[in-house]
Length: 449
Image (cartoon, rainbow, N blue to C red; front, side, top):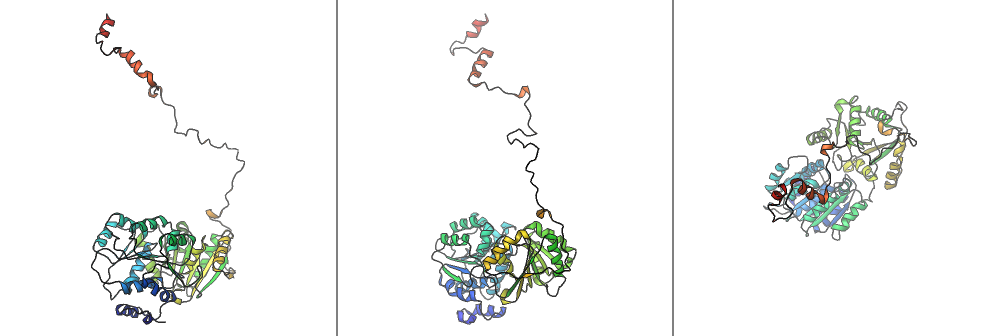
């Protein structure tokens, strides 16, 4: 099947020819007619199969020219980097179409984005938080919205965007088309579909959790962090094989720790990305990795979700992810557009349960590799790996939770107040000799005599 079979218009054909594409991917071919029909749709396909074009081709084909200010298409994605990427993809596809596209996300000046929205837009690509802020401020009007696309919805729910998504659904017009794409189908995703979609048609190219066939996978059983580091340095010595590598870690602290450790060996070849970095730093790191200036990118799960970077030779899971779905997203960064990819996972003894869940989801066992003899097996442990000793019979007395703290002190006598209750007015009357009856003004004079 070719793109000519999809019955697109000339501007779209010209843009596709410029991009050098000839055949649609399975998800693009299957989803086209469903999205074009206006029905609600749920698309399940592995990461790296061209989901952005799967919904944008039919949307752009049916998007007529309009001068109205309010957007007609809303695309929600989980991260700022993904907003930039999707906007770039849409602009490539709409090269010969008069379409206004704007990406909005947090971490940047909202007033600048308000001005851009006020100029009038056809398509808004946004993260949920910033979109809601703009809608609440009344600058962004969503009353003319025709289609809502939620891309990487499983990632959004993992990141805790559920309440924000529900708030956004509440302010959208009821008559709209809902389109959702996800690499994995979780219970949270299914619940969201049940609550807000109307008889959605499901387009599934692969069973949820099926890895791409062109990605080879291997695993190493490694005792601790420093042995993982030694193995990683050993692998990276082969720069020809490991020419463009994404290294995933579990959290920001681990990303910084690994970056500093690798910096001694691969200074000019290394970059890092996580949510504590500034927006410009993050975008620059991605661009340098994409262009080949740096061959190694250390990243957390949140930062690299959905990013489309060509020719990633290897994805290395330095930490085994707790959730199997995260593993699927990670390895989906390599082997994109039907190219050959490689995925490696390091697992300690504590991470074996997580690895077992990953293999159960994929319904396959990852081949195990032996650690090369030249790699030093370290006995040194980092703080997180050390056993916490709990003293069960500690002679130290437990602190009384209700006892006053060290800042507590008794009030001085002059600052102490007595609760006089109802007798207070009688004491004041006796002290100042107030008249006992309101009408007897000469009472005090008579008593003085």
